[in-house]
Length: 473
Image 1 (cartoon, rainbow, N blue to C red):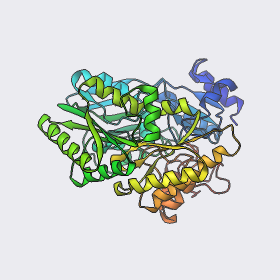
Image 2 (cartoon, one colour):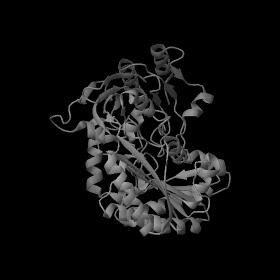
Image 3 (cartoon, rainbow, N blue to C red):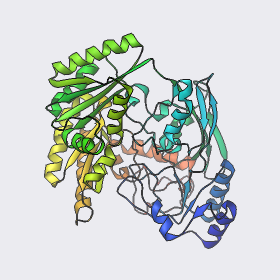
Image 4 (cartoon, one colour):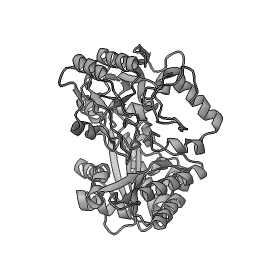
């Protein structure tokens, strides 16, 4: 519970339009894109690093938890105030501070919307590579916290591959920097450590990112299949032939029908699966790879391979892919998105397991995912108004993740652990490895005030905000 005097000091610091504390406003911040909820005591909106420092010092004085939040599009509960306390919303720290074309770098505040950086640089033929499906809304600060990915990270890598430096505020109010514009700095890679730490170690206030030059040619293909196995076999064969598209996305029949009804993107309504494949690079290389992929897909029993003829056709196909979650919402008001990873050779067997899990629990599960790197996104449809339906959806999700682990995969590829998967971290890591992770958390946040109850498994008393310095919790 936030003491009244702490609330008054935050209000004085930020002004009447710099915070929210009415119950009807707080309910807008009790959830993200996951299925969990928890109410904060107050939501504050700093405009500068100095504001963040002042907020952190007030929270420390009163022993109150802090959760950093971008756009709230996360899918693992990472931005939910599990222990109450203060949510720091970075929406007003949304400036692109510098674009350095000579060094192909940009410096941004955490509230900058992902797509806005590409829009700001595309006139000079540059772009920012990580492109989550929510890129029109999600923020770069949130992407850093979750180490977000996206369809085009097959070739370009996830957020950590494009973050070169950070300014961050520690739980005691200290401000530090790590990394910078240089390609590889000296010392320990604290930038890499903090990227993906889900706001449990520090609050990021500035980010140095890499900019990429737009390619000479882009080609987008749609391969259409009568079975999901044939689509999965095509992905494996493309890899075996040392062809690396920038994106290989798969939609199963359930998903592509929902997408097509909503977006009219040109997906076939009668197919069992499609692959959306994109190639970029020098013209001669791309044109050669188009033919190679066409041959592979036909060999693997694709019934048809289409190549987008215009930029408009390409954009429409990607509109279908990136608006998929909205398309699901037209069919089911409630759905649960999972995020397991398997080796590419296990994509087809895992799809069969997902189908069996759906039948076991009597739930419809659709699939749309980054097939090129085995990052599965089964979307479990349920009705929260039916007693026990949410529990069934969660049980189905956990069973799918257990399978991913069993075949040499992971419980997350880009959505993070958050409060959704922290209890199953012990299935993926040994006790010794988890203890090492806890020691890092304690080193950065000895009082456990930064986003408590996330990432690491919790035991009894796990939501206690205070803990003795140096204690492994």
